[in-house]
Length: 554
Ligand SMILES: Cc1ncc(C[n+]2csc(CCOP(=O)(O)OP(=O)(O)O)c2C)c(N)n1
Ligand SMILES: [Mg+2]
Image 1 (cartoon, rainbow, N blue to C red):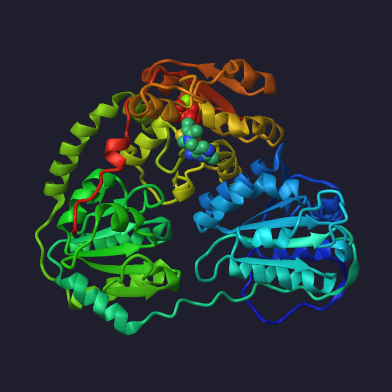
Image 2 (image 1 turned 45 degrees about the horizontal axis):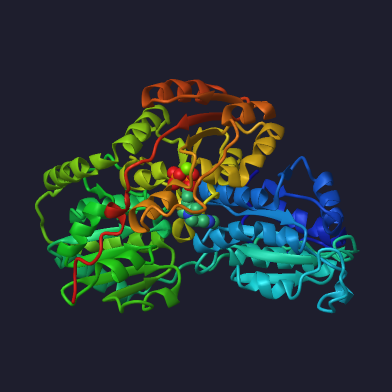
């Protein structure tokens, strides 16, 4: 479909239901899928989805959290807006952890949420799925929400929500619509995509940033999720400044791990202690400012889409508000006029990375499995992280080559996000292999969505590391609470038989070498999902490499 130019002009009015207007507006914004779970409040919406199913696919899941996580995964893998639809009350609440995660990750996810009859909202009459102050609950989860009150408003409300999702700090939005409004029809004027305000770059601040960076002796760049669309600019700046680039969870893949200047957390902390200027791109810097510490010798230059984020913890030397890419483009253009000559830091970084790799060998079992995965996952394949031992190690050691190929849940770090999020990523990017890792604990949060993977033939490859425990919790109880184990042992199904019972391909392997072979087989099977169970023992703790404490300041 050719990209429509944003325009203020609107098309002529024709009679549409509110639901049809929303669907037509989603299509005009180039959405191609709604992840959804139906119910009576939304019957008219599904009727409209049925009628438009050639242009807007409906992918139904087995639980609302699956629908919302799939939309999140699709948004993270594509960088484009995605939508999900659920019934009110329990439907909304079932999807809420994913919506919260989308908020935390600034991911453009649109929630379409049903409502009880319009005239009775707020009256406490006990309608099906009624919940007190649904709008108030939604308001805490998103930056933009609205109730569609009549069909005439539906298209513009949708376009406004989709614009809000991409303006300022990006993130999710929600639209509510009552059971008796979705199906009402009226002459509706469809709202084409509204122009997204371009980043206005503060020229003075930009010059000051270029001067500071240009004069820096030991500059460093730290990337968060907000840098994912600025890989070329970060790469250019890193080379010009000989600045190492730290990416941990959401910032991984912005600079290719094969670049010697690309570093992860432990070495990043050492470099933070030595740096005189840090360029922070699309990151909250919470770990750095709260855990690692800061002093007057270190000047921070912040680029953040959210103007209110700059001064929350620390006043930066220079603050630039807006999308990272256009700001960094100008910085790349301005820097040569101010840039000092610096010796190459490549050899130094290679050496220091090697020294850290030696220390990280403590995580040998995790690293061996990750090496097997990296060897089989193509360069542009997507790795979806989880809150599990192999995931923690992946954040520290897994080489990532491209942006948007390492999906990690950010500060929610919510157990159980991985499998359904990965399903969404694979659904939205069918042309690349997606690999999901989970522990036995996390996998069971959304394991029911294997049915969704079968129904929609989603060729996701899932590796479940089974230690029969909430292993992370169990280890903490062993090490810090005198081995008083509570609530951390797990009784599991036979994961291979479980996956096969859905019709999925499944296998069990015990060694990294056998995992490689099975992965190759699984990636070749594009016909549907594959699960590989890896029985494992307790794994060494990664926490000494993650929570490393203060290194600067008083
Ligand atoms: C939503 C949510 N609930 C609880 C936790 C706390 N938590 C962190 S790790 C963990 C155990 C993970 O178990 P599993 O998935 O089997 O991975 P393992 O540590 O055994 O590798 C728990 C319960 C969390 N991070 N998120
Ligand atoms: Mg486990």
